[in-house]
Length: 75
Image (cartoon, rainbow, N blue to C red):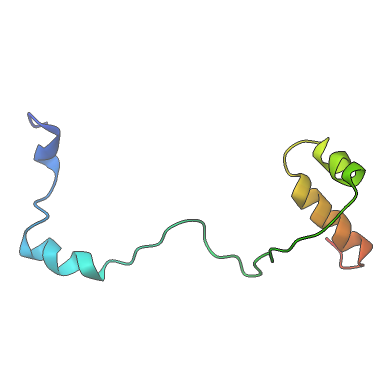
C-alpha cells in the first residue's frame, strides 16, 4: 500500500481517461419501471386513509392493491 490514499488512484488527466470520460454512460436513480405509476390527486374520506396508514409503511401500495381488486384488475 502507498503512503497516501491518492497514490492508488489513476491519473485522470491522462489521454486515456480524457478520451473516455465524456463517453461514459451515466445513470442515476432507480431504473425506469416498465409501467410507471401516474401521479394524481384523489379526495378520500379521512377514515379510509387512516385505516390504510394504521398498518404502517406501504399503505399507498396496499391501497393501490385494494383499488385494483375492486376494479377487477387482479394483483
